[in-house]
Image (cartoon, rainbow, N blue to C red; front, side):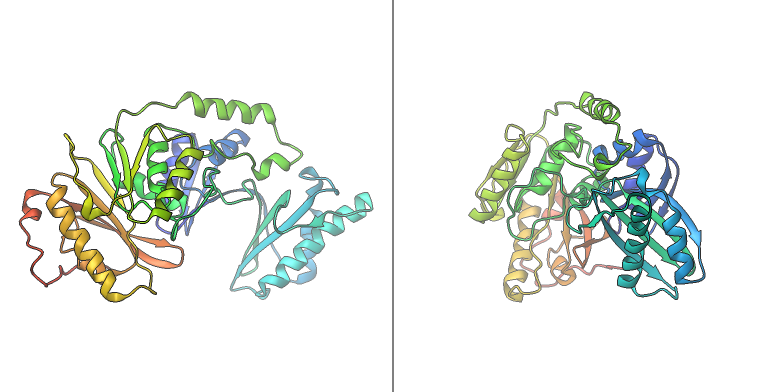
Length: 388
């Protein structure tokens, strides 16, 4: 099973199918699929929209806490790790008599460690921060599904981020936005409010077909007994061999010096400083001189703590500048402030529901034509948009 963010399930399924996944099925925030160890490694290394790749261990029904402990205790956990290593457990329950998540996690730890103690006379330690085996338990009514987390640390931690700007965008969300936009990777890509550079870096990685895990050094499966180093090396080589060199401009700007410095550092850490150009400019100051229109994608501020008057002025400014300066472009904007989106005074041609953090957002496409340029910003009436 591959876990993802709400709204990215279909994108993730397409990624998995390209890698060779069979019998895919879209679930809530996840995609289940069949595959071998090589696919598990490849999904971790190459899927841009996966948060975790979970390896299914077993499923079973139970009617009591004692039976739950007994069945988990009979699983051959020693095939995964040694008693000198560390474990962690995360549980989720629904409509079950075992509804206390913390209790389920504790009972799971006891069942696993009791098995090691009975076999070796010692047990693995509990380490919730850097476990060698991260066990996921999903209980629905009286059915329990048991998974081993082959990623361990969430895959949105690509390995290139060395510093954050203001409200950095999740890397998986950024990649998902780019993939679902339909960008052809041949037209130029711009983010005029680039923050710490996440959209720019993910766009450059996609355009050049750089594997999502290129900068990452560690995965959960590397700590398991059955880790096949040579197989993973071949998986990585296959991914690297498919890299390309895109002949496009990927540009970003930001009015904040702090954000821009964060973007520069992250871009350098990703070794993409020759592929991405950034400047210290606000959208109002930009004067694009481009032969062929491209795509604009950005995530403007929509912090609930912000001054409403400032947010209103910002979104009106964004809308006016897009209409006047970027005719022929496609603009994609992610925001959780629906009232502010209406102030852009632009009619969306597409809208997608996404979640950024815990904020319900809309990812909206605007086709910037000569017709939209004629819409005057002097009118105070905002565009009516159905956000359902």
